[in-house]
Length: 184
Picture 1 (cartoon, one colour):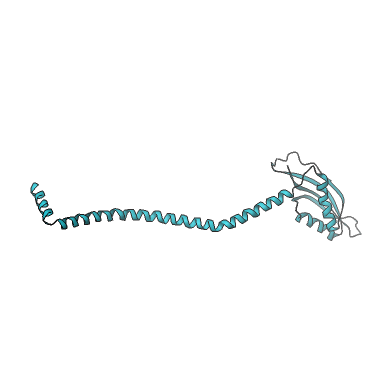
Picture 2 (cartoon, helix red, strand yellow; picture 1 turned 90 degrees about the vertical axis):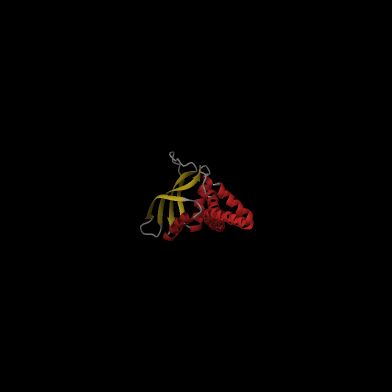
C-alpha cells in the first residue's frame, strides 16, 4: 500500500499541473451535482412564488373595484340609517305619510301609529307599526301605494284591504297594516 502512495507522489511531482486540473475538475463535478439538486428545489419555490405574485396582482387590480363597492355599501348603510324612524317622534313619522298624501293627491282619513311589539328581539332596529286608510281614485290610491313602496323609508306591508268606498262612485279605499323600520 505504501508503494501505491509512493507512485501517487511520483505522479504529483512529475505532472503537478495535470493533477491540479484533475482535482479542480473533480471539485467542479461535485459542485455541479450539488447545485443541480438545488436548482430543481429553487425552481419549485420560484414557481410557487410566481403563482402567489400573480394572485396578489389580480387582487391589487381588483382592489379599486372592491374599494368602490365598499364605498357604495357604506353609502347605502348611511342612507338606511338616515331614513329610520324614531318611534317617539310621532309628528315626523306621521308627516312622512302626509307628504305622500300631498304628492299623490290621495286622502288619508285615518292614520294611526301603534306601539311596537314587545317581543322585538332585533338589537339594531325596531318595527314601528301603523294602520291607515287611503281613499281617492284608483290612480291616486295606486300612486300612494307605489310612493310608499319606493320611498326612502323601509316599509313592510303586513295586510291590506282594497275596496270601493262608494259602490256607485269612483272612490277607492285601501286599508293598510304596515311596519316601518325604526331605530332602537
